[in-house]
Amino acid sequence: MAADHVIGVDVGGTKILAGVVDREGVLGARRERTTPVDTQEALVDALVEAVEELRDGEVGAIGFGIPSTIDQRAGRAVSSVNIPLVDVDLRARMSERFGVPVAVENDANAAAVAEWKAGAGRGTQHMVMLTLGTGVGGGLILDGRLYRGAVGAAGELGHVVIEHDGARCQGTCTGRGHLEAVASGHAASERASELFGPAADAHRLVRLAQEGDASAVEALREIGRRLGSAMGGLVNVFNPELIVVGGGFGAAGELLLAPAREVLLREALPPARDVVRIVRAGLGTAAGVVGAGLVAFEALDSAASGAAS
Amino acid sequence: MAADHVIGVDVGGTKILAGVVDREGVLGARRERTTPVDTQEALVDALVEAVEELRDGEVGAIGFGIPSTIDQRAGRAVSSVNIPLVDVDLRARMSERFGVPVAVENDANAAAVAEWKAGAGRGTQHMVMLTLGTGVGGGLILDGRLYRGAVGAAGELGHVVIEHDGARCQGTCTGRGHLEAVASGHAASERASELFGPAADAHRLVRLAQEGDASAVEALREIGRRLGSAMGGLVNVFNPELIVVGGGFGAAGELLLAPAREVLLREALPPARDVVRIVRAGLGTAAGVVGAGLVAFEALDSAASGAAS
Image 1 (cartoon, each protein chain N blue to C red):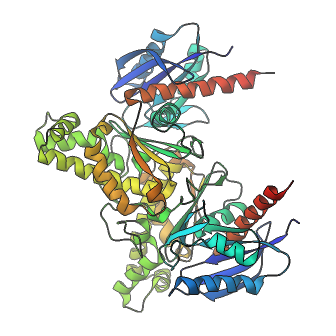
Image 2 (tube, each protein chain N blue to C red):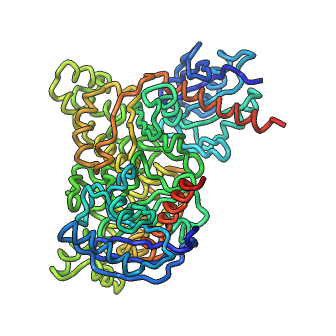
Image 3 (cartoon, rainbow over the protein chains, first blue to last red):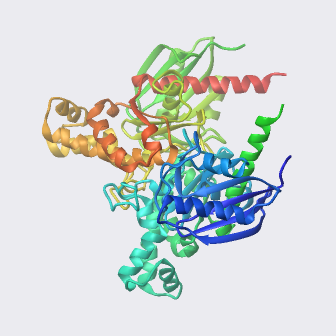
């Protein structure tokens, strides 16, 4: 039985998006709910409910994209910066619960797979994706496949250091001066509060900048310049064809990317500097759920080839 | 004809080391000379002479490890931070001159291949190498092979930004706050001059620290802590099994690596943080020439399989 449909579940810091996905990465029925962040059990229960709502007989596998570092040896969520998933064997629990193959992937890795196979990165072999959401996620397509590292924890591009001994990172991360501490939606909201009062957030900051407010433009420019330092380093490390920028905060677009490009040109060495293009993600908020579906197909095909005799 | 020997040439900022290398990475006869840094032609002439000195009928290929960014599409040295090689088609010139297959590889990439196949990284699939010499080089073994990126310019790990808008990098690099600006032998020599007078250099700094001089120990500790910020970021990006530290300045050993590990533990996320080991390179100053030889064998085998009919 080669199933035509899987369920992808994209677990964000604020909401869970579940959807039916086909092999071409086309998204069918979908459901959205708020992410419970009080306890791990409440969150796992919400994931089960999200799947139950969409499940029918044709669903061959389930994929979860979660904002966590993952140990793929056991399908375990090791730690999460913005949600309460710590040291939980999500793959085993979910495959036992639903009786189908289950994939667990970092959410930004999933988004990178989606953009590569069905979005802005189609046709490339070397692609770096940065997802600017509540946190900053990353995904790496190297030599034409998703790079996962020794145990599946690679691609945490929000946790490169761009300011040695700098400001504390978010949540449980003990690092300092990480990209996530300056270029995430969360960091932008903090800056918005400082400038425009406690009720202002990243959305307001971007809207004000789009309306021409000089201090909002300057705040986004400073964030964009730091993003450019990180991008310049990534270009020197990966020599990618493409850097794809996605995520809710990434929607600030050229307000971030123009200053980022300016600094990138200073930081990156030729010829890598002259090869790379910086583009916006093509799939919008669907990238996470589509990518979770595409890694579910990978788990399905892997289980099928393992079972063949 | 499957040749048993090749010539590897390691081009450093201060000296050129050429040697005969076999398929197991064992180094035979070798010759050393000073690197001419005044003009490109003088440097290219010195490379030709270095090969001529060692060449005999059994040499099947030649490999050059050069401290340059490379465009592998044409075997071209695009730019170099410490030597006068700019936009020169070294592969074409040398294969025309010697009539055998020629490989041109970044020197730190070559060292990484050597450590991976014949040194500290044997048996690993995911290895990051940092070469702390006059500059800071890098090499990446990902999923069991050398990662080169879109055109061959990947792995410039000395040019990750660890201090946004920080100090100017070395030579022709326009970047700011790069690892190379703080953790290279050149940077250590500058610090030594500030502390111990104009004649002091990185070697003196390391010797004084080994003898217990408190300000020398502290200077190396500060460099090591910045190295740790870069390593922490690299662990989050690559989730490697191993980081191998080589190069002349890398010989400072635990004086650099102990503070680096301390900061790495703060910066890196689990589980990648708990998987990685930091080790000294195993091949010493031979890594570059051995690696240049190993990539020469790659060029030889590739030419042989292309010619087979």
